[in-house]
Image (cartoon, rainbow, N blue to C red; front, side, top):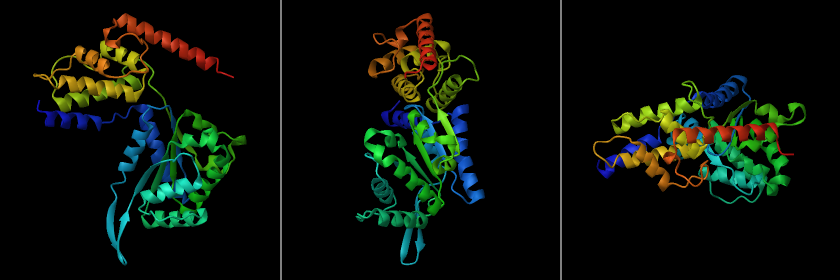
Length: 328
């Protein structure tokens, strides 16, 4: 396959998403927050929580894309850039001023405003002028770092005030420690009441069941890959001989899973005819750094099926023990 066509196929595959059940639920929570905001005329928000590599940022980007791209419309005195949805990473270190400046830059405002009150007023005006319907702040776990301790409560109070003044839902996304932000005495804080929709994304649990998140995701990716690349052959991602070593290599981290599959597909597309083979996964794992690999000294695809399953069972037992004996 010519390099240009190969790159086109790989790019198209990278853009594919499988909405397995828990992923679909998380996506629906964002939509429910939007619907509640519209019907109640009060900003109601969603909080996505999950470990790194569970697909949170990708889900946020998909949600933002559903509102359409920014575009320009005529207005008095010229044109205004309409930004239906805004995605932004929380700056570090976290301060109200830093968040305001970051958001204003995304909204096309670069003028310095040293006064936090002036920045806040300008931000609300700009959000309304650009007709922003939803805002997503990602990496909100930065509020839990030691250097943000003094700013944490005042930042959460500011966020609630911004919701009230703007009427725009502000969705949050962060790692699992962010659950502590939603836990307060009786759940009665203004912040907790505003963030009434939440979803947690986990790394996949290994399962051969056809209705499991892991199986459905691999099957969906397999179908998309075969469709885009016109692969021949009988090797499929949801085959136990493939899905087991994939889990050994990634322990269910969606990001690492996709990296391995992408690299294997890239290798397979260099041959004619195009056929996905087990050796492609062997070579892919040789190319990649696999920090989650359960067999550090071995290529997961050089293990026997029984060895892979034994490693997965041992890992699951260790995780179950850690859950039942949390560190104090």
